Amino acid sequence: MPSELEIAMESLIKVFHRYASKEGRSGTLSRRELRELMENELTNFLRSQKDPAAVDKIMRDLDTNGDGQVDFEEFVSLVVGLSIACEQCYQTTVAIKPT
Ligand SMILES: [Ca+2]
Image (tube, rainbow, N blue to C red; front, side, top):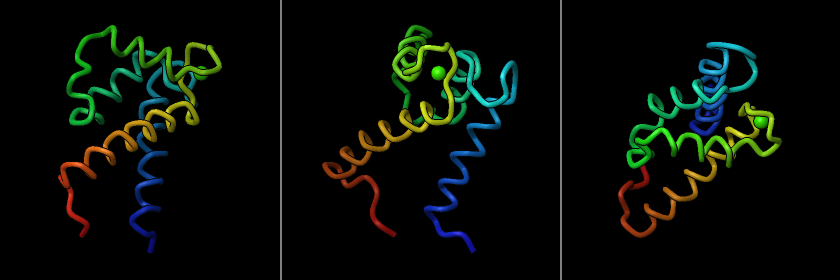
């Protein structure tokens, strides 16, 4: 049986490909796919990022090789960045208690 962390990693891969396969190249996220992913899957973590310009900025920041697409490696850096920010919040607020 996969561990909690392994399930989380599998989810990361599945979610990325669910959105990446919607249009165009199936292995990368276009701007529209990235926006959809953020709107549907990061609603709580990105509540402040409602304006479309924020998606464009995040897209530019993520697209480190500048091809206008977000690949899995670039996507993971967003998740890692958000996780680090959230972990720092939890350390100060103790919002999540270890189970
Ligand atoms: Ca890219």
